[in-house]
Length: 194
Image 1 (cartoon, helix red, strand yellow):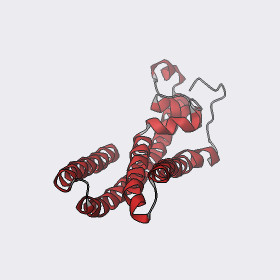
Image 2: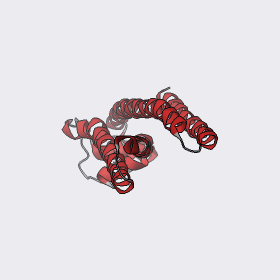
Image 3: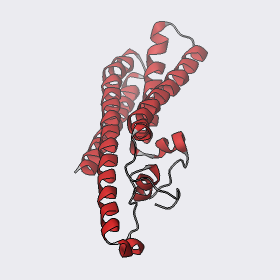
């Protein structure tokens, strides 16, 4: 159910973003990027950015829930192996509740890519899309505040990168940080083999 929710939320956000881009293209064509375009952009883009950020936050929460379930499944597999060690060759996922075991169940390796791995997850991709959206919104607002083209472009890039960085830190602290603080009950004695 959580994966279904994550997919639905991401699809809803990306559909809203696509619709906003099409609407803005039509308005831009009708107004030649005049004041009407700016007004519509300032009405639509903040709402889409809000939807994107809230979608991102919920996906991070879903990932945290998923990790908890994986830990529970690993604990159950560990109990099976204590009762029947001869079953070990048949287990393809992790049976330890440490980082190696969790990553084995996810089909990944602990520490591989570290912080940068967060960008290949669904929330990581949405962080980049939200950053681009925040940059575009800044580019629309900048000229209205009297910013020149160079300053506006620099500010738009800076705001976009800052948004990505803040969301990535939130994701890392929300999903990875708590796992590092959790003490494993059945750690792997030979890391790399879960």
